Amino acid sequence: MENNLLIWMEVGFNLLYLILIWGLVVLMRVRFDRVKEGQKNIANLFWVAVFTLAFGDTFHVGTRTVAYFLEGGLDASVSLFGASVGIVGWSALVTAVTVTIFYLFLLVIWIIRNQERVSAFVYLLFTVAGIRLGLLVLPENQWGQPVPVQPWSMVRNIPLFVLGVGVGVLFLWTAAAKKDRTYIWVGILILFSFLTYLPVVIFVQAVPLLGLLMIPKTIAYLGIGWLFYRSLYGEQRIPTGTGD
Image (cartoon, rainbow, N blue to C red; front, top):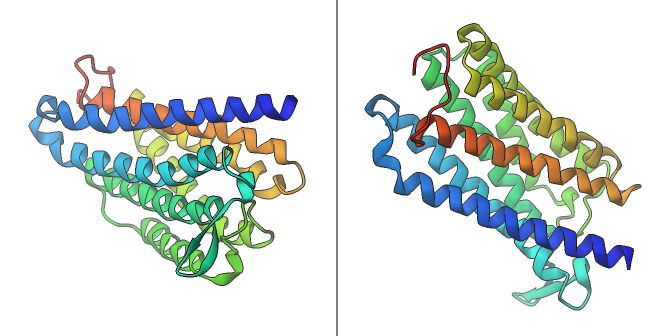
């Protein structure tokens, strides 16, 4: 009964998340005309970033939800070109790619918004993103498995941690100097998402219940989306120290 309850909780949360994230995508497109002229470039970039995130999560979160109702559960597979493909594992590959691209978009937004020159640190972040994408295609990932295999799960996530934490620090660093509340909170939520993700990457194979930490991680992404939406698209804008 306890396992059934956890499954239904996950299914309910997954469906709610997908509704909210796609709702945000639609709202941003519908309200694009409310964006100030000087911010339309950033607004467009963030819309594409959230669309990319929603697209990838629909694969992973959506297939996990569907898999619970299939024979085999999370181990369920389909036949593709004569080969058996684990739907949960391979959908995780799509999410792994799209979340990396999401952070690349955030990095570009930070560069444009702050009119920053591309420093050695920023070049490093672009480089680790490329390394991350390269690692994802290697067979050691064993994407067909519903639970990530070690030590490769840790190996492929190290560049993502460097990228994400680096982007979070950049947002906090510049936003704190400008007393920009919106971007301060964006930076905090980015760092919080990786704080909750770290135990999952390291220990979920031994302690499956740690997978529940993906819930606050996912809520953090919704928070980031909502903050950008309020700042760029909403009628009521969050006060900032920069006057924008």
